[in-house]
Amino acid sequence: MEVFLGEPNHQEIREFVRNIQPKDNLCISTYYSPDPILFSYIISKYIKNLFILSFNSKDCEIELKMDNNGKWLIDNKNGKKYFLGQNSYCSYLSITTDDVLPTLTGIISSTIIEKRKLTEWELNIIKDLGNLGVIVEKNLKIPGYKTLPLFLSLMLSIDPYIPGLTGNRENTINMIKEINLNEVTRLDELNETQLNTLLFRIISLIIKENPKFSREDIITERVFYLDYDILELAFSAIYFFDIIGSSELLQLSLSSSYAEILIDKFRQTFSKGFTLNLIDSKQSYYLIEAKNFDSPLIAQLIFLQLQKIRKDKIIILKRGDNYYTSRYFIKLHDREGVVKIDDRIKNIIGM
Image 1 (spheres, rainbow, N blue to C red):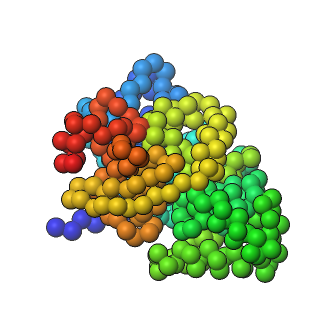
Image 2 (cartoon, rainbow, N blue to C red):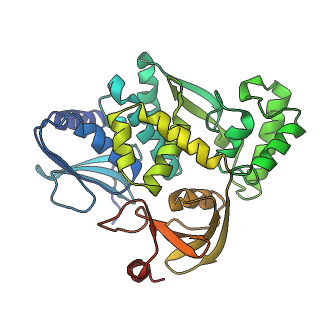
């Protein structure tokens, strides 16, 4: 039977979220992804006494759930369900100055992981934050272009993944020089001819792997707050969430200054360059050979763009003689982040 869910009731959802923030005690059960976890941690800051975040329990007062229809916010205490559609959980928070960075990170990380554009609701919420200093502009979807040399922004681009440039310092510098630029040139220093040439090169590289890619996929709404590019911060948060765990998101929600640490570590890691090679496909997982790379989740995001994998399989990275996956792909109650494949995990995934 087909179910017609209709549009989310935005004001009803916001009112419900507003009412749960000042509670004395609260337990939230969520699936394992940055947006719902950041949403939960931001709410936890306003709980007066005890807060519990669970990735397993179905007995919590509040449950965050995602299915084929979209996202749900479930009030188990009163038996009510709120349908969010594609909209991120963080877009329904009451946002204070202290919460701008983690909230925006939740929204943008949701678009990256779910391979979608900002919804009209999310974009309006972000634009409304202009009174807090948030800036929205239409420009290239490459990270850090206001502060980084162009070649480094291209190297760090995960979504879109640019074949031959992302993670490859030599190729990127050579391409920059071919359009009469140098290693210190920033994006805002390009003239119209150079910018058009750059766009043509980027789109040509991507379209060989993804014929559906277009100019609209590289020129999008970009969000900035203070000195932070939220796209780059979202990449950083996704990366460290995947390899370390939800504690990285907790630190970001508690202290906005942690954003600078995440971004600095992300730049240091990815500016060294990396390579990924899909070497095998099994019934339940993909095997990807990785050099200088350790995030199964970001590997999935890359190969989905290359249209070489499906989203319903586990990602396993082969590094030397060892194999790794992460908590994002398998439900381990005792471990988060990247985990080395052992006999127990082999039994879980059928390896």
